[in-house]
Image 1 (cartoon, one colour):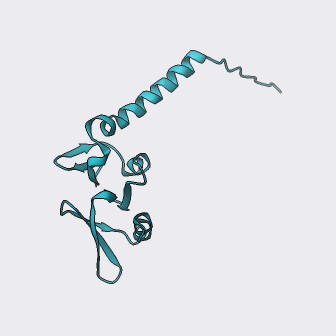
Image 2: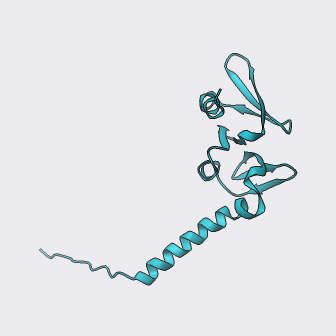
Image 3: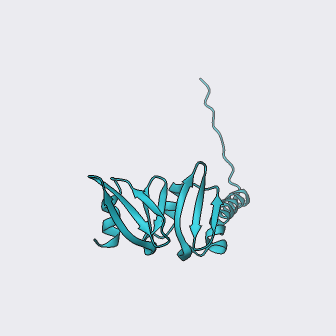
Length: 130
């Protein structure tokens, strides 16, 4: 019976390069939020297949990003995911309308609207204090 012993050599430089590359990837991902778009000007974010459409006061930006990533990256005291395809800036809410028996939609100040999923209405109301 033979025993195989593997020795792993620790290379501090390679580890440092790896982490620097990971940090750079994160910087690139957040670049558009930090530089191109003032987060406070975002009205809503809408899923578009493998992309998201970021809607601001006067422009729309199409970015290759996931809704799940943005939901975690954006400030939770300002943004709320109201549907699998919509994240909204709660400061741009005009009103919440009930339609049908258990269905809700949020009407934003720019006149656009988004359906609120049944599973997310409670969280939105709590976030708004209503």
